[in-house]
Image 1 (cartoon, helix red, strand yellow):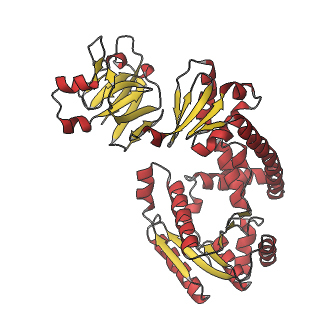
Image 2 (cartoon, one colour):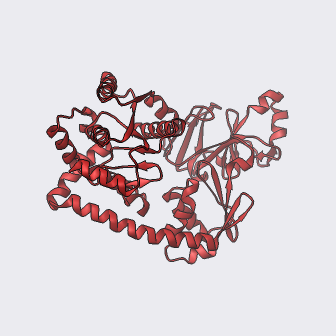
Length: 439
């Protein structure tokens, strides 16, 4: 019985009837059921609804439905409107990811501003299983396969032990209205593809698949906690800090039997991804000096240590272009293409549209302003020239110099953007792959 299950879980985590609870309500069966049950049990609830404006008039209909539902139960309602598509474009992330970031940022702002004790969401067991398969496909590692927590700080999910079908049946039996998002049936979305194509096969293979997955989550979480404790002990033992730098001894990581998993957990909080961890470990057998970047940190493979440094320390505005990226919007619009060199290839002479030998550059490429001491080999020259001398030769004004951006591979200038490429990265008769960049 859903009300008894919800009440039991709330008591388990000492959620008191007088505590202020903010309930995230989309209008779907799960969130409406949660709000209904909490209200019926006498908890002190308010609702929060996000209008993401993703489904034309349907988004506004959802908002009206939630407004009427809350009005009928005398539940205070908070509503926030978002231009989700614009945010997704600006950040270069998926619509789903943008919507998730927007709603949780706003929810936690409300929690702090209105002094709520808890944030409650309607996530159920099927959501958790779908997330498991999404994370499995993305390669998030053991951390992403554990399943959701019933309680995480002030976030509580009272419906996690229930199935979607149970929740909808509860609504029908008790005359509780809810909205159905038609995009839930669109298999173009990864989660929907898993829901409608993967999970029915698993259910056919094992009629008790839901119960089996709930046990799996418990087992994975137990293993994870053991592993997490080991990693924390190891991290405490082998890492050292020098002001804002963190030092990680290469030898100790290299000798560890689970080196990749351990290094991933050490560096994950600093924004490093699994594929970058693999590249870092592969660099152990190379020469020192190779660098790796997350959005906010730089990792240098020194002679004996991996040195982690915040990017802010460098005191300069830096943007990065990872391998495979085709378009970036910072510091201005840049388009990138890689392709094999064909017989009819024509070399660009446009300073804003350049061709480079793709096999001579190393990703991530870096974009920054020039600084004192920078030098490069201008196209056609055999000797290096200081950037300051290049500016004098080209008759740059002080303002023009301040606006110059450089494209770098490692620490080597590839292109004085909009002006001249470096001779070391030019296309030659031996070039096999082209890197084309347009600004």
